[in-house]
Length: 159
Image (cartoon, rainbow, N blue to C red; front, side, top):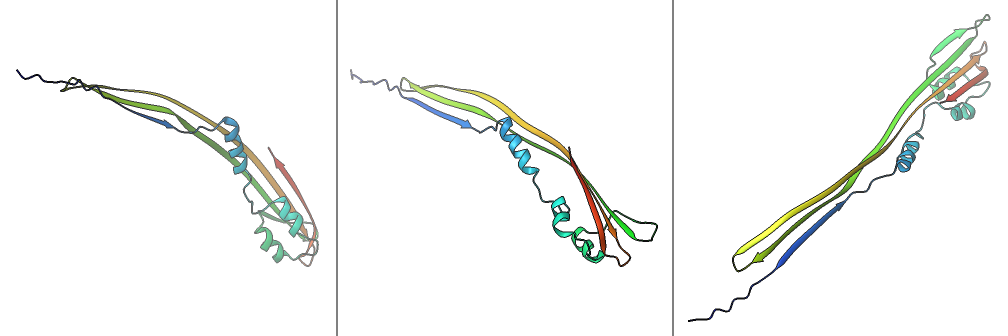
């Protein structure tokens, strides 16, 4: 009789995979929303303050501000130009993420069998921030008889 030496191989194989995705806090989303709110504007209070000057021609005003929304005349037939701009902005920043784990395992039992299992767990989360803002800018430019700026005024509001 031949004696078989049998070694019970026990081998364990485990593979762990963890996936971690970063979540932003509500404060970080709020900062993203605020950063998106600082976009360049074609017409701004700064543009009016820097560029519009008494004595400027109407053609130069158009090159700086574009066409007015409304043109009226006063009792002496002098033009008054009105630029009325309204901007409503809605910004939303969101993220989601979480942790997911997948565990695969197996063990050799005896010299022929295989036993194994898989398990998994997960956690999902999300956060976000939203902001709605409205801005208005009204510019009134008064011209003299020679179509040159004689006076100008502006009003800006943000809410």
